[in-house]
Length: 512
Image (cartoon, rainbow, N blue to C red; front, side):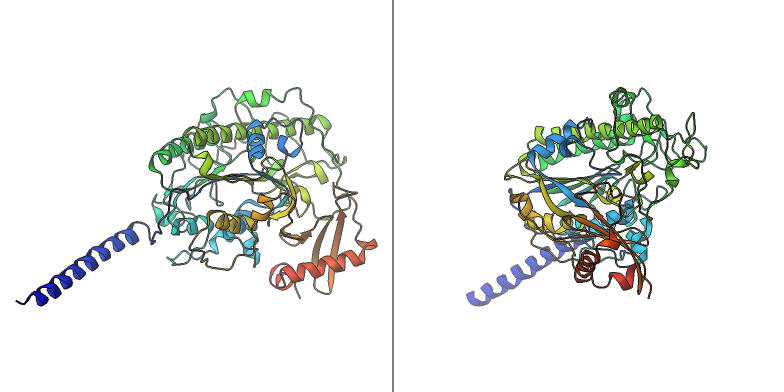
């Protein structure tokens, strides 16, 4: 054989060998993960995304003096705290679905807890449907611990097969690592020793503070699991996206006794009393009043409110759970620092919606009012500029997804549907920068839009719409409806609503 022919033959053999090896590697990757990973260098930032159920901005960092939240306050001192952050739906599952997809709800099903996430197509797709799925597609190792979607553990149901086909978010996670303990039904409404509100026993006090250790309840177990996983990441060097979802202060208010003792002598005022005001958009606090205690709370009939003593006990119980969760967050953030990951990790702390503690005579969530939609948002980035300065820039939960895309400089940015949010990076760099003029939110029938000064709530039928308008400068408690005296303001805000989301009046809440 001639030398040239030998060379050609060798090249052909080499080419076939390379193709064979490449195809084998690619198939292995697709079989194990379903994705083609892209390469990363050592400066690729990690993401620790912390979600807290039912957390309103009753935190020291938000100027609340009675709040004992030193760990979250410390995070705020290192990052950017958003004072005017609003979720898109005033209920857990729908709020999380909107945040995770970066989109406003389009249908009535997307305003409901389970249905909002069930609307995601579950068959395998090349294009990401949710935020953690996009990070996974970009080569991040994605871990779920606790409640990130509506599921309190990351599974479709506790009785499902524990493999990736039954993750609540399709193709989003490399691992779901939520410790289940000995709870058979629910973690989010858990009591100690495997009991929970939904186990059929009828045991359901609204609050319970036994002498137990932190990790004898789910949130303490979540923190311990996250700590061990961060130690692993500290050794591997691979970029990660960890979703860590804490359950408290969701009802029932349950935490170790030491946290309730911190508030025994603390007076927790309501700045606006227990007044309903002019709004017609309250609810009957059905979840709260179905709980039992040694002296059951009854929904007031003759009187307008609960007694001040009852109100104080409820608020103290809520805040005890906030401090319990604050402590768990502190343990995780300390580990992040100890293993050398803090300087290269973006930390997001997000509350999935607000919670009325008597304001507007409501004990719970599920309203289109400020207390139902206003929640904490803190974002800490590597090389944070002007750390510790808060911003009054309006922010929406749908903005978190595009913010993290930009912060991490993801190369693959293809999403199943276009994102509705805007990046908050300009406000993270400069707290004086404004990124949007208004935020749109929903709760069942009403649609609401908030700007720098006003909240407008719209309901009813096209051609006969009902309006509630509140001035946050003169009436931060949203007690006085000034719609009748401000038609020009309503007209301007309605125009902004239609410009920002022109299909909302037709497709979502209002009938023709």
